[in-house]
Image (cartoon, rainbow, N blue to C red; front, side, top):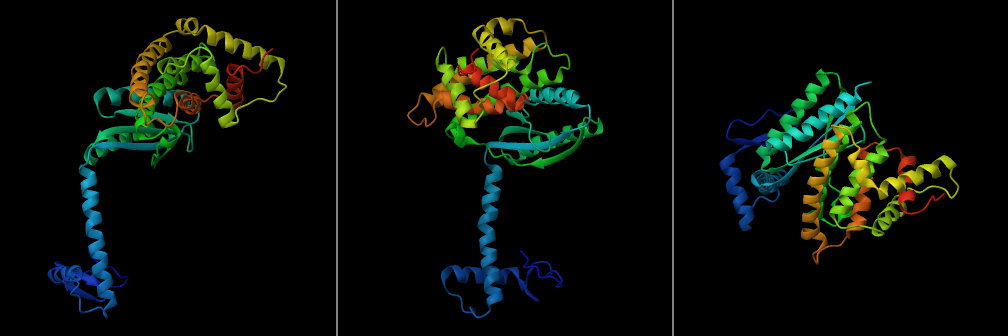
Length: 338
């Protein structure tokens, strides 16, 4: 440790800088031990006392950091990228590939993307120690560098991810939410990468959201409460009077929602394969979510409220315009009737 003061030369090896002088490390350690025992006699030397306090404070912190690096836990790596002009479709394709490849190889356990500054934020998680996370960080960084060289992104920046676990009822619930994000993101990325889309984003969203509601057992009339919570919780509502075209679209939305199986069956490849995979992954995780959280005494948030929050993230991933989100919420909540 060196109490580095501007303009002072560094202390010789085995010594520590304290102001304008150097103190042998052994002497410093002996004096720190006297401090711990309450046997200090040089309290008038404020600079040296402060240096010893800083030294002792840094030691436990360093041990804590070292211990944390050994602990196996979920660690997130986030990077933000700005798509290059006219390259969004190609970037979505690259992201979809990474979202499938890294979890498949064990390099990552979870993945998400969101449309937020500087354009698209992507997050990969891995369960392991700090060295495991560093390997993932290097892999993600290399891929971002590749996208820069391929000119599918024009800017990249690191970032930190803070899970909004409070929205979903805590850490246990958030683990399942992240796994659902991991299923949702690749499904959306395949859709967004396809320039010749066979259906509008809102229709594809209905297919994916139906999987989630079915998975947690929200059926029949109960789903209207989900949409009403989306409306009330986000302000995603329409005025009392809307154009006839919007009312007609609302009728189509409700019709598709009642016949979601037919809409899913009509999907062309490769969207159909993406939707089939999404449904299977969501069914498995939603069952764990229910058993491990919603069906326990510790649950503070119910499935309808959790799905309402989930929907907001889901629509962001699919780049649904705000008016479209408002129309979906109103139509499925039973409003905007013709």
